[in-house]
Image (tube, rainbow, N blue to C red; front, side, top):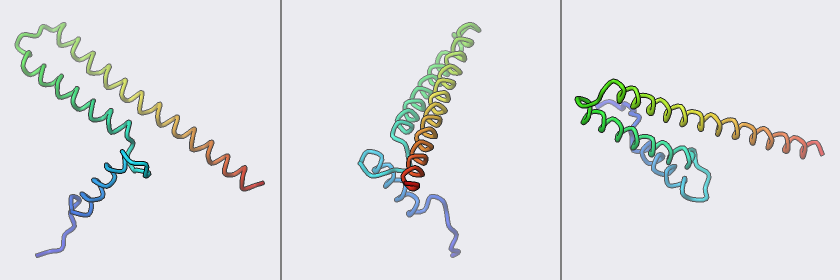
Length: 107
């Protein structure tokens, strides 16, 4: 038997579970609580939209399909915009912290 390493080994599964638990504790976590929760909400919404489309597809007119696609792209754009906004805020906060540290070190 070979000693191949797989990504989904026990060590990685344990580390993933530990990081998910840390999200809801006061310990620092690799994952963001807001992003995880918004990602889960997005996946649930997408599943609902696709399920609706598959069930109602024969009855939908071209206008209904265009409206459905518009809603899909609108939601996706909103989620991407929120993620980019969080990244910009995070970078600004990190830069401010770095400047504060540099100022303290120079004193």
